[in-house]
Amino acid sequence: MIVKNKTVSRVCLLGLLISCLWFFSGKKNLASQNSRPEVQNVIAITTTQLPSSQGVVPIALQCQTVDYPKPREAKSLRCVVTNNTATSITAVSLAYSITYEANDQESTDGGFMTLDALVHPDFHDANFSKFIHPGADRVIQRGAPIESNLLVKEIKINIDYVEFENGTSLGPNSRGSTVIAQFREGATQYKQWLLKQYVNRNRSITAIAPLLQDTSSPGAELKLDDGMQVIGAEEYRRNARNILSTRGGASELQRQLANNSSKLPD
Image (cartoon, rainbow, N blue to C red):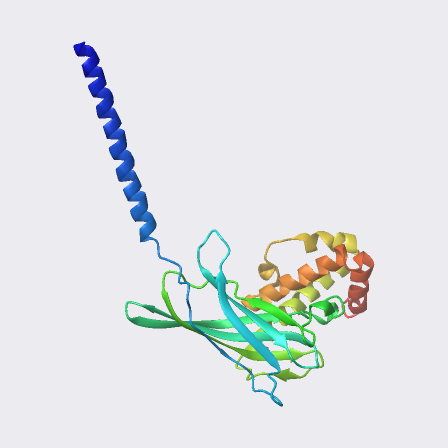
């Protein structure tokens, strides 16, 4: 009987110990969860529109923050550009600044959100449907999340540069056209590199097809040190790959390359 009581006592003590461990573990996890910075739900955004013409804003801009894709809990900046003109838009660049506050100190992070639907003249016809045509709108979203560990005081954003299909443009153009030009320079550099590969491989599309399937950055191969040029090179490769697979096939890609291969030595 005494043995039974001791056994029961040990079981009770073991159960109490497990309960205490569970309780304090839960408190620790709860404290850990509570220590995580909360995502700021309300962020003030100030958008500056282009000057109106005859009472109409030529290119309307609306921006908001949206949830950034998991696994990271954060916010991202998302804008919608609406073309209220009679001419299609081939490229647009938005200038933004984000003011943060930490320890009573403010800091500002800025940059450009850029959309280039043309990429390169080679893709004018293939990408025509991607232009922002009259009356249409297009979403432009910042690729990186808004820093979630700092308090965001304000976001300011404006249309810096708009390029139309007919070659005209709008906007203050603080640097937007330069950003687009760097992007297209990267596309041109990749085109010239691909053209050399085409000529050196007996003008065979089959021989250069694996190059278009490569997913590594072309920056090192092309000796590009500008980030926008690298992105432009990647976009040319992606568009050329799409032409080869779904937009005309080998004959269309060969036609584009053959039109330019005479500029290179055999």
